[in-house]
Length: 394
Image 1: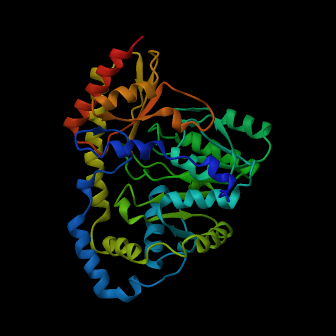
Image 2: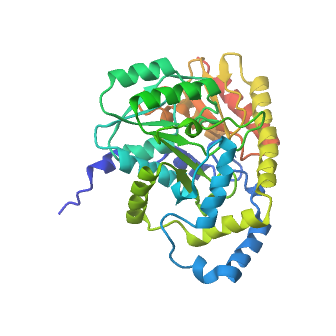
């Protein structure tokens, strides 16, 4: 008898980024592909001490089952940290998740029926597309510029589109483009949301990694109707291997998310939650983030300077004020997939942009990650990409 899989499996495909990362495991490859933090910045020695401390102080509890909502002291610490984004949240309205990716999957499960519509930026985060796609939605891309979603277009789409159930946005140092929404655009956006009362997932894994200026208030900070679910993670500011993320939302939403999590994994790793919490107690978390910012700022500068030096004038790219990515757009007739194929032969990798568009097919863009490579290799990698690009110009 033939095994019959669920129809949703037809929509689930291997992540293009993960497939590329298999190739980039070779040490000779200069990789701009994954959104990987710099491993040399992980606080390994401090975490050795923290791990022992947690086991000595509360080993039996750390190794036991725990509550679905998450470790209470960590939720309190997260609530304090969210003041950075002008969000005043009760720890009871925070749910700890197994990375922010789990929060995206849960959001699809909570809000989306087959055929419902998700609005998103154009382009948007590839792994969010993958998480939501299992619930069989229809995606509609909202035209997006350097300041965020274009509000007039957003409202027109809402008015013309039945069954809009969810809006997904990344306002700070967006993945993949590195762009940041202006303050005015955030305020205009929440006015539209309040008018039509559509739930919003505000994904903010990079917001604390700002290289210049002040951190902008989150869209959630303007939320008066409890429509915005703020999602974040310790993966980009601390250690992704711990798989600790969180969501902050109205109590009516959190109650539903807790039920979903109970059916998924009962709770996030007890010992990992306690280790992060104890690290925050024992060490200067802000100093750790400042160290990351200093390194990534230098690498951002390196990739921008290298592109200015080696790319031709018809190649455009974004200038991110934080985060991990810049976005490249070619107008020279080259397809990014073809460029990648040839670049891999030169031991340099990136992610073609087409995967970041759930509906449109855009083949002349690609994403560059600059956080994971030292500056000397960044310059060499961009030089190789430019050389291949020039050889492919029609």
